[in-house]
Image (cartoon, rainbow, N blue to C red; front, side, top):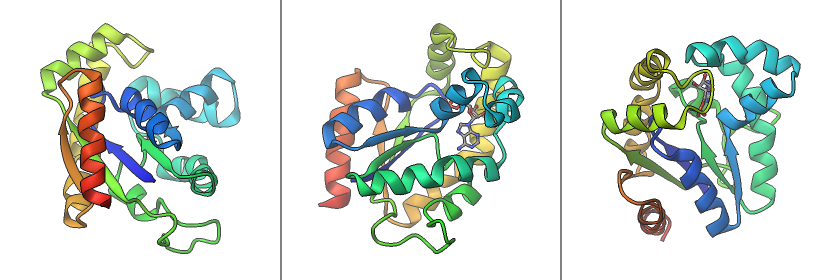
Length: 191
Ligand code: AMP
C-alpha cells in the first residue's frame, strides 16, 4: 500500500500516519521527524535545515528529495509507505517518485491513495499551541506555517483530486474515528 497524508500542520498527520502504518504493515515516513532527527543528531543536513524549521519556512526541495527518495524506494520493497509531510509542494510532487536514475514514477512506486485531513483553522492553532513540540510551535511561527501551507501545499489537493487519487476525511473527530474514515476512503480508492 502506498499512501500520502495531506494536511495543514496540526491536523494529525503524525498520529494517523502511525496508525495507518500499523494497520497496513507499511513504513511511516514523516519528513518533519526525519528533519528533526537530523537536527538533534547534529548531522550536516541538520545544520543546513535548522533555521528553516525554526522560522516555519520550507526546506529547499533539493534537500528533501535527497532525504526521501531512497527511503521511499526502500519502503516500496518492504510493503509500501505512508508519507506524512512529503511531498509538500507541487515541484516535490512532480519529482517525488523517481528512481535513483531519475526515471518517472512507475506503477510500483507511485501513490495509490491520498487522504486530505480537513480540520478548521482555529482548531489547528489550538492543537499546535497545546502540543508545544518544538521551537516552531509558538503562535507567530504557527501562523506563518499555516500561511506557507496555504500557498505551497494546498494546491496539491486539486493536483491529486484531478488525478482521481484523493479523498477528504474530517480530521476533527476522535483519533480512532479518523483512522477508520481513512481506511474506508483508502478501500474506495484502491478497491
Ligand atoms: P512537520 O513536522 O511536517 O510539520 O514539518 C516541520 C517542518 O519541517 C516544516 O515546517 C518545514 O520547515 C520542514 N519540512 C517538513 N517536510 C517538508 C517538506 N516536504 N518540504 C520542505 N520542508 C519540510
